[in-house]
Length: 456
Image 1 (cartoon, one colour):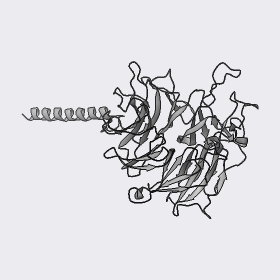
Image 2 (spheres, helix red, strand yellow; image 1 turned 180 degrees about the vertical axis):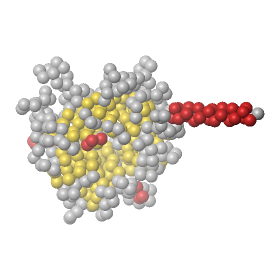
Image 3 (tube, helix red, strand yellow; image 1 turned 120 degrees about the vertical axis):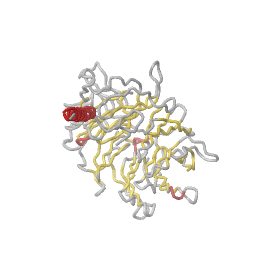
Image 4 (cartoon, helix red, strand yellow; image 1 turned 135 degrees about the vertical axis):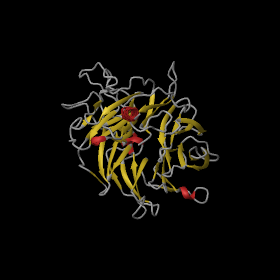
């Protein structure tokens, strides 16, 4: 009996060891289980706006750590989903479908898009309050009784319903402060900025109009929201001169003497902040004599491109309100620049639309589209392109850029396709899952528009 008992104990001990070992094997190399519907922890959402054959419009899910698309159906978000915005708390993804002006709020945990609201027109600018309670959509063609079209629609994100409307003619773009206590609105063909105070909506004058700008398109805010730095598009948008101007938001005015001093820059349709350094991109234009024409030639010299004109990147110091290395030129693709993101290793990805496409055949076998990559850490300037600037050999408009946290990877949507760039080489990433197609995801097919990471 004693021997039998010892045998049983030993068998039980071995079985427990095997059970523990099997658990270790099952968990080895895997991440903790996720509460999302797809089971993924680190997701990227990609909007696809065309239904054709077996491919359906919707928001596709990708594992952003392994570059693999799980076998799950895309999330329904209208007939032509495009622009996406992630709420600050990352609980929802707002998706705009241009075909029916439908705004869908996707529940990121359940990966379902059952809440919708129809906007009174097209939008390309949507901002969300820092508490994730409220969204603001700029609708330049929204019908307004008794005045020119244009309104900012205020949307509750708990009920997905309109709660207010701010009538601002031709309003196109919105920028929101860090605390959400100010929103700056910019209208087409306007030299004014509409300063919105959300706490006054419904109880007082919520909109203050400031003049003295030059086709403003965007703004950035100091950490305490006391100052807004306004980006003027200038000649490229039908004005006179691109520049950066400062607004004192504590007084909702320009100082001193009601004038916002302008610091000229070569061109500016898009910008990004890295600390107190601002990177601005645009295509330099001249409006002399009433004729708007591009001015930065880049088809001559030892490193000339087949494109006649180039865009330009500027580096701006907000502390001193001055250009860094004025007089130098950082050449980019031309076109209207409206996408910019800073990836790992200081790699700045800049996207444009309607640029000069260079395709084969041509005398230099150059292929060129609307994407530029600039090394902010080691680039030199002064040549075409300067050391540190790369124009990838890919055609098409850039509609989405998303650096991937915790990786040296950047997802870029160009010409409707996803390309994955390695931020250590600025080349397409080698994908072990599909070695014959670097920078691609094998089972991801469609006409994509935007990309956002959901979980970080």
